[in-house]
Image 1 (cartoon, rainbow, N blue to C red):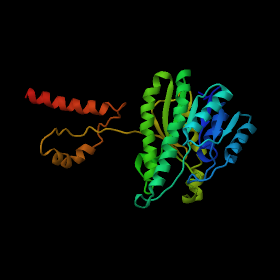
Image 2: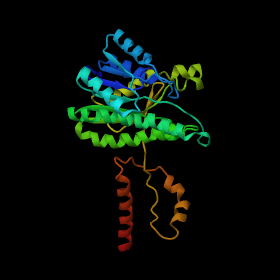
Image 3: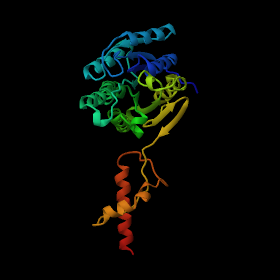
Image 4: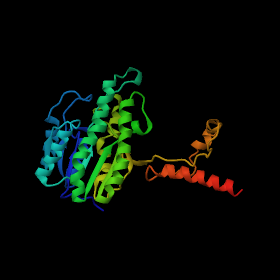
Length: 307
């Protein structure tokens, strides 16, 4: 099965280099018309230039594809709306949104300025919210849409010095999980990609061998699978160095304690059993946790009532 995006229109934020550039080039190669967004800022979000986005557009056009550049800041909701409008005015629709724009302001939490915390949240989380909000109604109205959030292992599993980045990246998983439910009946699928890739945000902490192995081009196939017509919905896909995995937020079978004055002590004593992953489940929605817990309480009551 060949993934063909002919006739589809894609927007990729932060597409001037690294992962975004790899995404934009592959989308165009598979037939999509691509709006290449990049503010052209430095790694920490300062400055700005249209040169990076325009260079990617030229690469796409030189290969026979169709593309436009856009310099909107994803942190500005009006600019995000204008970006989506630009794509629709030019090509009549928007089918794919890749929320990829991001910055880093790493520092241990003890030393981190709260302004840097807010700025990273604003770019990664609210930037994705702004762009998704702008594309949401056009996608619902046409009965088709594919939205990809860029999460991170730092959000899924934590990483020293990245409390701001990790908080934003895990928030995107919760955002995705809810939108994947809300958009399903309208043909709008929403997924997350957790990439391991060498970009300008990681270049100064990697060896030459690591840089080669973690080429962003090795991640882009995951992106393509998550935004094509046959894409899944509500998935967290991890990708790097040509390897592809799925991350899950699971629920263990745990331990029923009930109430009582010693409940906290029973919980503490039962931590090993609570952590035991044997028979763990992956809830499809947030309601499954309370349903699971209430069912255990009711089962316990029934057992007590009937001896």
